[in-house]
Picture 1 (cartoon, rainbow, N blue to C red):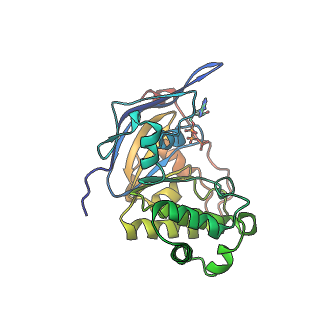
Picture 2 (cartoon, rainbow, N blue to C red):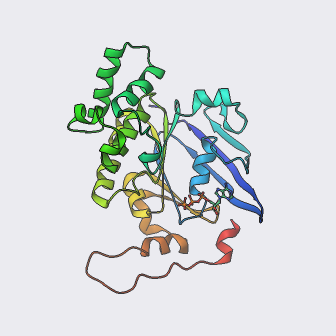
Length: 280
Ligand SMILES: Nc1ncnc2c1ncn2[C@@H]1O[C@H](COP(=O)(O)OP(=O)(O)OP(=O)(O)O)[C@@H](O)[C@H]1O
């Protein structure tokens, strides 16, 4: 499989106009992505989500995007019309958000929602679509797919809801998935199960993944490469297998700011920061 970049981002900036002045959320981010799993980590407000949203054309109306390059294959994402976006977003690039509650329609059964999504992308009759919907639920390792198929979103757990979202997102067979804190509303065990399912699907189907999270350890266990963001800049880029080689004090701080399981009850260190890190 070719590893030519799917995505090229050069000097991406996202700036918001607010009543209190400009907010520079993303301040010159550059990276390229092949068929690989890339993590973007950083604390709240570091610009991770806005980087993902800019790639999907989902920047809020008060935001302005500039970039020397923002390309998905040869598609210039910085200059698409709404009609052109419909051919890219959800079809070639998909996003999984944090909480399935806000993404699923509460008054429609899960099965009907999957069927509807399936028939938007594939020309099949109702019977065949039902078949495919059950297959999709099985693909995300739901053991009782018939029950989930007939349930409403509020009748399933958060972890189950997130599996359903993953199943729906796979329907158009996107090349790139952007998962923004996809599991942070779930408890730790379910979090790992859902990530493992996503990881398997991404590998099996040769898709690329951008996994956005504040949890450096979680990201590095599911990604090949990690970008560490601080105040709108990428301060360090690392192979996930080389976290121990992190040089930037902010990355080292993120690594140390985790409770240890070995019974050491001493206080967690406070994440230190210096103004110079934000200068890029
Ligand atoms: N519509 C908006 N108007 C003004 N500022 C915004 C808007 N959307 C986001 N921001 C600001 O942009 C900055 C970066 O936000 P972003 O959501 O990318 O951070 P993040 O690293 O993903 O953090 P979190 O984990 O909290 O989502 C923040 O300071 C945020 O307040």
